[in-house]
Length: 231
Image 1: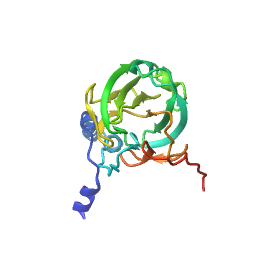
Image 2: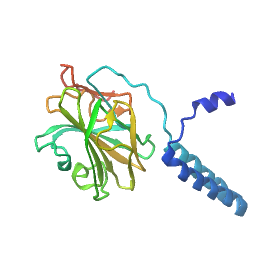
Image 3: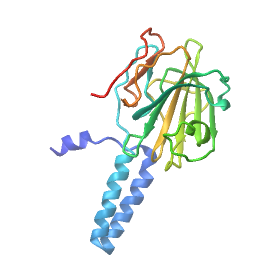
Image 4: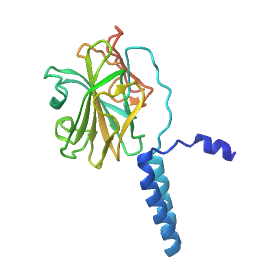
């Protein structure tokens, strides 16, 4: 029974361990000072460990598939210019935005195969990440990815209302493998994926996406954009 429980628990991302240790230490002090406070802080410790969970995912590996870089809800599917600092031009691309709430897994993954051709951090505001203008005004970390066929894509980590730390573990020149981990955003945020303009999305607004597993689009496919309804 205990073995089953242990195997069902997701590992904790290395960036979360300092927070887990601090919360656990605070709970021990709480138990020493006043037991009810200790129990409350123990609950906080459990939530912090839950927030920084980093489960393995099973990623589809067919060439051309675009995989969700984040857990969350597909919030917007629009045509928009990529971040200017990436040097990809001003032409509008397909942009799929995924909003993460504080209960989602916050580990981010590459959406496509290729090579990181540009990486740029830009400070900014901490507006509600659900707003369209957050793509322009908020703090962000942007990666341009040169696809195997020579086209360009991009993935952008955007800080949110309570997010105050973007972690990106790769730099220019790194290999990108769809579904592979590359970073994390703490405490609520958004991730935008920019794809070649002719790309048709295979997800719809309001749909839940799973990082490393949900197929957002097929760069080699000819399927038209999907529609959906709440049932």
